Each structure stands twice: as structure tokens, then as C-alpha cells.
Image (tube, rainbow, N blue to C red):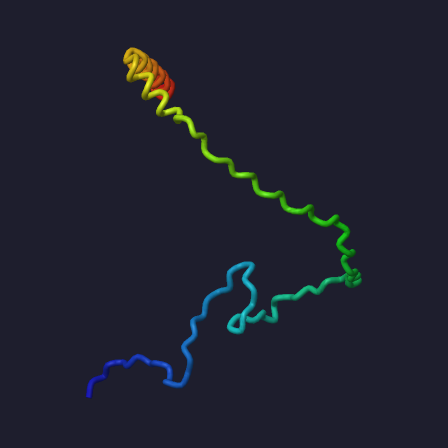
Length: 116
């Protein structure tokens, strides 16, 4: 036989609980009850219960009828704007070159402002 100390463990049927100090503002729980040194203050003035009133009847005017849907018109039968520009550039290619030049200047001005 050896003389080694054996650690004591709780019995199998006893629950293991952890004891810790209560944090300030923590509500007491079943594990943490108020101690006799702590005093509990009760309110000194009791107010009257609020009077319960029924809400007034709905006095809003009725909603107007829904707006009828817009009348759908047929799409225009003529050529679209893209078709018109394509036809113009086909006739006069210098207009396409001028548009590309103007677009490049606008893009350069935008990038210059973004770089500031």
C-alpha cells in the first residue's frame, strides 16, 4: 500500500456547482440569492394604475379607388434611334469619328476629376 493522497471527488449523485462572485448589476438567480447584509429597498410611493380607454373608432376617410392601368400603346413603327444613327454614320463616316473624339474628351475629363 502507498501513502499517496487521493483527490476527493463529489459523490456521483451530487451536482457540481461553480461558485463565483456576483457582477455588479447582475440579477439574483437560483444559484445567487441576496445575502442578509444586502438590503432591498421597496418603492416608497405607489402610483395609481393607468386608466384603460378604448381606442376611438376609425375616422379616416375611405381609400380612393385604385388608378386604372395605363393604356398600352403599340411600339412606334418607324426606325429606332440606333437604326437612325447607324444609317447616318454609314452615309457620313466623319460623324462617327467626331463622336468618338468627343467621347474620348469627356472620358478624359471624368478621369481627371476622379484623380484629384
